[in-house]
Every structure is written in C-alpha cells, then in structure tokens.
Length: 237
Length: 237
DNA sequence: CCAAAAGTGTTGACCGTACACCCATGA
DNA sequence: TCATGGGTGTACGGTCAACACTTTTGG
Image 1 (cartoon, each protein chain N blue to C red):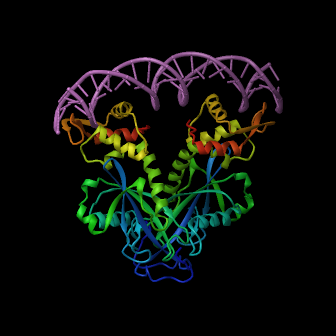
Image 2: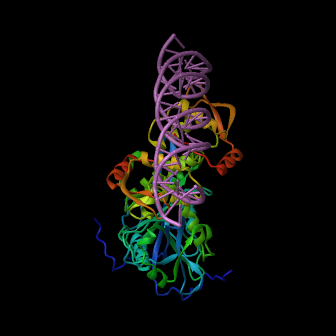
Image 3: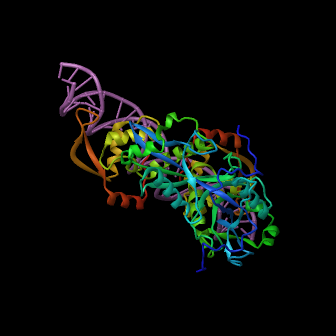
C-alpha cells in the first residue's frame, strides 16, 4: 500500500490547477399524489434570492459521497438517506460566480420524516416536478436528468419504498408510479405484477384516509426483496 | 445574461478550497472478436511504470467534455469520437499522490481508425476486457462500471456502429454483441431482430475475410436510425 | 342510498426463445 | 470433396395490455 498523507501535499501534480467542486442535490419526495423536489432560495451571491437546488462545496477532507450526505443532512436533519450520484456538470460558465464544477446527486426521502419547520427555516419548499419555477444555472437540466434516472431506477428496484412511509397501500404506491412515469396505470395490472413479485407483507389494518372502504396496508419484506435483487428483476409498467 | 469573466476570479466563493480534477477515459475497441480497452504505462510519478487508463487533468479554461476530448485526442490523434461521461470518483485517498477527483468518461472507437505506431509510441496497448492486468487506483472499478454501461447502452442504441468499420457483416456485429454481453447468441434470432429494426443498408459485395462463402456487407442507415431513436427502441438479446 | 375508491380474472396479441438444415466456396 | 462459416423459418410458451363489474362504507 502506498502511504498517504492528506495534510501534506506531494509535489507530483503541482503543475496542475485546482478547481472548485460543488455538490447539488435533487431531493425527491412524494405527497398529495405528486412527485416533488426540494428547492430553496439562495441566501448568498451570486444569484442571491433566486431559486436553486440544495448545494454546497466539497471539502478537502471528505469524499464526494460524504459531502453529498453532509449537505443533505445540514438542510434536512436527516441521515442515512438514499443517495445516488447522477452526473457531473462542468461547463466553464455554468456558474457566473466562478469556475465551479458540480457533482449532482439525487436523493429519495419520505416527506413525512422531515421536520417541516426545520425545512421552512432554511426557506426551502417542495415543488411538484410538473410545475417548477425557473432555477439558477443548469439546475433545471439536472432535475430533468434526475427524473429520467428515477424513471429507469423504478424499473430495477422498488424505489417506492424510499418515498413512501413504512406502511402504505397499493393504491398509494400506484399513485407514486403514476407520478414518476407521468401517466395513468391500470390498477388490475399494477396490482397483479406487484404482488407477483412477492416482496410485500400484508397487514389486517386498513387505511381509510383516502376512501370509505379503506385499503389494506402493506410493508416491504426486506429479506425477500434482497433475495430478488440478487437474481435481478424488472418491474416494467 | 450574467456577464462572466473567466480570467478574473470573483470573491464570492473564496472561503472554499479548490480540488484537483482529473479525467480518466475508458476507451473501448473491438478486434479479434474481443472487446478491448486501451491502457497505458504511466510515465510519471506516483505509480510510474504501472498500468492505468488514459487520463489527465482538467484545465481552468475547458469544460469537462472538452477536457475528455482533448485527452483522447492527445493520445489517439482522433477527433469526434463517441464519448460519454460515466461517473465521478471522489474518495479522499483514491490517488496516493494528492487529493484528486476523477471524472471517468467512456469512449467507443474503431480500432482500425487508429494509427498503431502512434499508439505504441505512447506505450499504450489494447487489452481484452476479460484479461486485464492489475491497474492503479480505482481504475479497475471504472472499467467494470464502463462495461455495465455499454451493456445497457447496447440495448438502447446500436453502439456496434461506433466500434465497427463503416461496412460490416452481420456475423461481425453478432461477434461484437457476444463480446459485450459475454455470451453466445443465436444467429437466427440475432439476424431476425436486427433486420426487423430496418436500419441497415445491404450491399452486393461480400466480405470473404472470415469465411469461404463470404458474408454480405451492410452499413448503417443514419436517417432511419435517427428516426427510430426518437420513437425510442430496444434491442434486447 | 349513493358517491367514491378498493378489489378482483380472463383473453388475445405479441415477443422472445429454442431449435436444424442447406448453401457457397476455397483449399 | 470436405470443412467452414453464412444464411434461413417455425412453433411454443410466457408476458403484457386491454378490459368491467362488485364491494364497502361514510356522508
């Protein structure tokens, strides 16, 4: 193993210039039958007062993944959030302040896990993906790419479980997929395919918040799910 | 539009530290019925003499995409190569020389377009993906991810056309897909699905380099292909 | 009693896969 | 003439998509 020492720079690469590296997080949540992203009002220059994604700069002593988790934690107070690197944006002029490259991450979280006051304190708010305001720099491009990513993700892993509460109903999950794909799904086919995967635990309790009849609650059986993941599976709709 | 000035730094972000940003290119080619990557022997410290991907540092005045194209061009002499950003690697200790984050790109090129002497001059060589030597840092991880990426890519676009000469035979194309997926394919089914896409132009000439009977040459019909791309398509095998 | 959402099966079309033989030719 | 790779068609099974009615119950 080569001996590394993070506090003392070597001279190997001294001919090369360093660049500012930022993180931007596209944070998705699901509420009111809509897929939403968390946006905030920038409180520093440049572009102060405009709307942007949650972001920050990468520090010397942290990996990209850790930086993303830290930034997410600073804003939401949450840890252990599903976080996935999306793409790195590196046009010269993307940030008018200075040359900054930005590594975009996307995150999925359960809106109800969030302390709403805490979020509002940071002047953040949830925006439906179909109705986003104008954003700074290339942040709209990032969101578009993130949406395409989770659409693909939704086929390979039941991402619904990251976005819904632990106990959820099948109609709720369907609404989520409809929000992700932005189209209506047939409830009979959806149910059939979902249950065929055999990764749900059914409960006797019903959730009556959205209908008089009430819908059965389910949760996600992690054991069965992990087994299925290894074998590889698709959940096409 | 915000006025930008790349030569004068603003003070907005002065509290933040800059980081070295590198590019590494996973360059794929196809020859002798095998998918190959272009590797070279590092001629600078650290890890001098060891085998690595083609890489370099991003300069202040170039975008990431341009940096990748430049680095590819410096080594191969080729321009306008299919190049796609793969992933950004940002562990603190990934490079023992210093803290460097690396944006990996993958490229597809026709081996026969390359000047072999030029490549050898840079002490580069093509390695079959099934038989790579040990590589520095996280470069093996990068290659693994790149392979998964082109396996997926191969389903959404006929990437064969980037890797094969302009005129090619169907058995050649099949060999390529077999190399990408690392498994045998049924020639009848392959042919059927391929021709069903209706994106090939057939020629009367035959290529007799690999059989006595000879195989018909085809080329790729860009018009039909672009039309198909818009509608979206899958080429599952 | 009625509005509103939950729950339930069947069928036809299409697609993917498996599979075997003849052809053309250079050596 | 024979060895080698090129070229061709069919049948089966599984999966996806389309489709409509009954159930429950709060208001």
